[in-house]
Length: 272
Figure: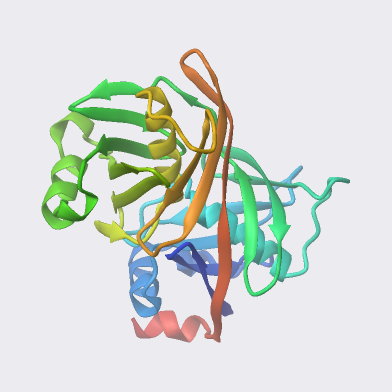
C-alpha cells in the first residue's frame, strides 16, 4: 500500500487508493488516529469506486470520525485522481465524484508543481444568526464570528468554547474567526475531529464567505465573490449565487499539492 500525503493550502491529508480494496484496516478509528499522527496530517482520505461517478471520496478526521465533507480535501482528491492517471468521463473534463455529503463536480484549472482546482460545494440553506455570529452547514457544521483583530484570538480557549458549546451538541461545530481587510477576508478555524486550529479549512472558508455576504460585507471582487486567506498565507476564492435564503453554485477554488508518498504495508498497522 502506497501512502500519499497531499496538502490543500496547508490542510494536510493522508490519501490512499482504495479502488482495489485492501483498505478495511485503515477505516478503524485507532488506525486512523495513528496514521494521522505518524504523518502529521489533519485527516485521512480514501479514493474508491462508485457507480455513475469518476470516483468516490471517503474522509475521516484524526479522531476516527467521518461522514462529513472536507473542502480542501475535495480539491486534493481530485488532484490525486489526476496524479493516478484517472480521466473524467465527461466530455468537458469536469470531474464528478461522490463525497460523504453527496455529489460534487470539479475542474482542474492548472497543473505543474501543484494543481489549482475549482470545486463545487453543496448548496447552503438556512444561515442562522446566533450567538453573535452565523451558523450553517457547508458539508459539515460551521459557526462564523467576525472579529476586529484575528491575531488576538486565543484559539486554544475561544475555539473549544464554541466547538463544545451546548447549543451545538451533540454533533458540535467547527469555529471560524474572520477579519475583514481591504484585500479580502482573513480566516482562522478550530476544527472538531482535529480538536485544534488547522492551517486551513475549505468548508470553513466557504462558510466564512457566505457569512460575509449574509451580513452585508462587500468584496473588492464584486458581489458574491470573495478572496480569503488562510493561516499558511494561501489565498482561496469562493463564489456563489444568492437566491433569497439559499446559496447555490458555490465554488471553492485553491491549490492542491502532493507533499510525498511512502511505501508502507499493513505491517505498519500491526505495529501500532
